[in-house]
Every structure is written in C-alpha cells, then in structure tokens.
Length: 237
Image (tube, rainbow, N blue to C red):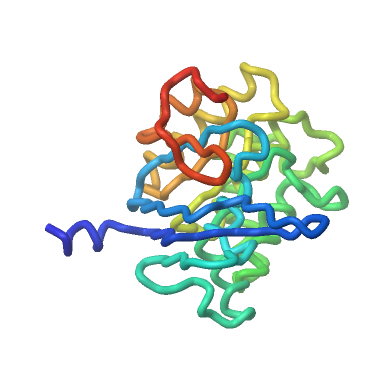
C-alpha cells in the first residue's frame, strides 16, 4: 500500500521553513511545513493575510527557495536542479495563475498564451494553434486578437488560465485567482479551473479568501503564522 501511495504522490513538501531577515529580526513566513499533494487532487489553502499562503505557493512552484527543508516533485528534490533546469521545470511542469493576470500589454490574448509555449520550446505555428484552441475552450474565441487593455478582468484571468495550461503542466498553482473579480465572474473563473482539473487530471492548489469556493475543492487546509492548523469552515482568524 505504501508503494501505491508513493506512486500517486506528485509533490512532497518536507519540513520546509522560509525565513526573512527584516530590520535584524528573523520572520518565519513558513515554519516547518509538511504537505503531500496527490496527482489529480484539488487543494484549497485559506488563511488571513500574511499567514504564509503565497510564500508556500512560491516555494512549491520553485519561484522561491526554502531556507531549510525539501520539495520533492515525483520523488526528485526540486532544488537540487541547476538554475537552467529549474527554469525548464517551472516552464513545463508548473502553471501559475495570480490575482493580477500579469499579461504582457503589448501582445494580444493569443500571443500572450502562445509565448509561454514558445519559451518552453514549441514552434511558433504549433504554439499559435494550441493557444487558439485553449482560448476557445475558455470562451474567448472572439477575443484572440484583443490586447489586455481591451479585455475585462474576467477575460484577462481566462487568458491567464489558458497561458498556465498551454504546456500541459502536472501542477497548477493559483494565488487568489478570483480576488480582483466580482463574485459572479469569480465564480465562473473558479468553475473553469475545476473543469480543467476534471478534464485533464492536473493537480490544482488554489489560495483563496473565499470559503465558498474553497469548500468545492477535494481538500482544504488553513495556514496560520506559517504553519498548517486545524481548519473549520467559516473561521479565518
């Protein structure tokens, strides 16, 4: 049974601490965190501002290095990789969706999505064709040639989701992806993420303040002062 569990594990966070030195004081954003992510699961992470949620996502996605501890991806220590291999890992294995879409303003929706695939090594024609397909899947077939300044907040997040998925990553990390949207648009964007999980079996970790949305995921964890604590619906303090 232990072998089956290991086989189904995508990510293992092992005793991870992330400390920052601020004005001579050590601030622990993460404090000896342990977490296992299974292939295909959806995990919601809740907690108050400054609890360590975003730092955890950055460490899991290899955007930030832990001060101590390890992050294993399919059994391999992520941070034993060279910087070049680490960049390739982030590009191909992890998709990121942030509260602000971070789209490049000078490029169209189609170009923003295709560029992520081209950076990962896909040819321009293949990347454009795949971007068109994904943008159609997220309901933006009529907005392919619009630049971000001509898109609504919800449309920009849909472009960001398509960009995060174009390289077919095994792990998708979303940090408050509905935080800047009205409730109806946010709900639509969240449902789109859940649809993608059901269709493609990717593992999703979503940081959110919205407990209703978090409750739709297969598991919810609460983080407080850099540590996981018991989660009770409706209690963020």
